[in-house]
Image (cartoon, rainbow, N blue to C red; front, side, top):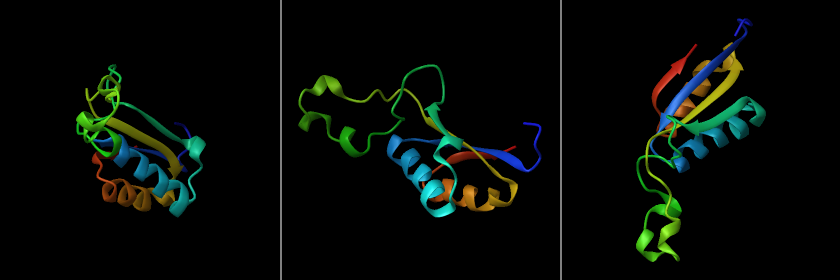
Length: 104
């Protein structure tokens, strides 16, 4: 990114629920535009994270059981933010459970 006033923050989450929570903190508490936030599987495999949470926590209770979320890898959230929001964004990521938080 050529604009030094904008930084990209990236964090890894073990559940989609935690990734969504980080996004909501960025949008609602820090005023980051939703269009500047990106969520994706960390690698090429489709995944809902590495640990069950929320609706996928008890697959035996769900109907039909073949709709279970794929737990093949972590979820990555990245956001393009103003340089002066980096500390707040890093804190929001960590409070939501992010690991490997990087800013560039």
